[in-house]
Image (cartoon, rainbow, N blue to C red; front, top):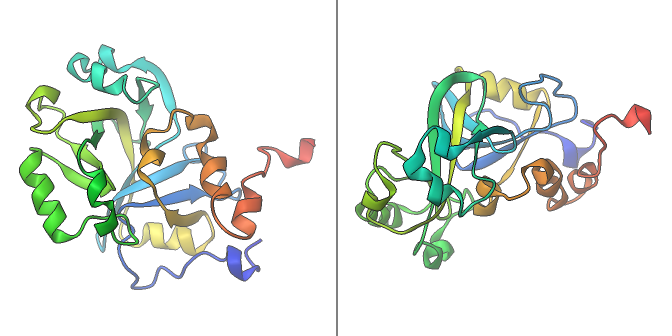
Length: 221
């Protein structure tokens, strides 16, 4: 697989930040914390990286941990808490979908991040807002939804997160553990988290699209 040029992982080197992009677990990644996961990268710098696993819901309704956020979470079903990763499982991180940002999508770069002017505009709209991809952002969950300053059309809450130390993520990418692909806003609040790994790969080009049909345990077929 790794010998095919189209399947080779990108050289991490001194490349751009992966913030706002997806890490898709390759079949060779057998760590149960990340097997067949799709991770949105929230932060990526020389000191390390932080992301959220997007396709691991747990059987805990949002209303059981943060009742004020449950109505907004119901707009992006399932309104369950997701396991964002193995680090700090008692920490809760929220993503929200902000109304009124879609008209600016033409200003988004290939990384999915708004330009400086748009980011500043949205910061004025919404307290505690930090852009992730398109009209999706992280949010300070201590702020009640009604006080966010902009209508929200969805929210997803994550228990814990995925974290990497300095150069650790780059090393895993170089080893072929992750495919790095562009994110779209709908990835972060998919109504079919169980199918996200396949869906993201199938919309890619070449061998990655074929890999989207890769069964969980090919040796039993």
